[in-house]
Length: 91
Image (cartoon, rainbow, N blue to C red; front, side, top):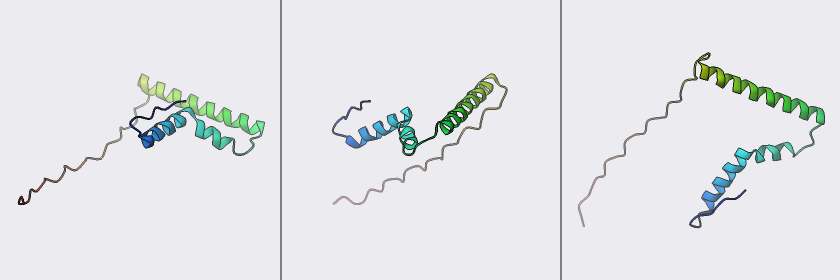
């Protein structure tokens, strides 16, 4: 995994790296590997994850086909207009 640092902006590169790692599931895997997981527990967890993925996929498919109503869209909070600039006496 590579991240390009542009204009010596390490903070932005770090944010990009964290986002990539999050997307790849690195943090989730690190958390799971902190403690030993019995094979039976691992099998149960993977099965439940697969069921959750299948349900999500089926729900999205049903929404696409019009069998289920689409969830309401989130409304973004309205921004207040900026205050007018008051120009004082020059000098």
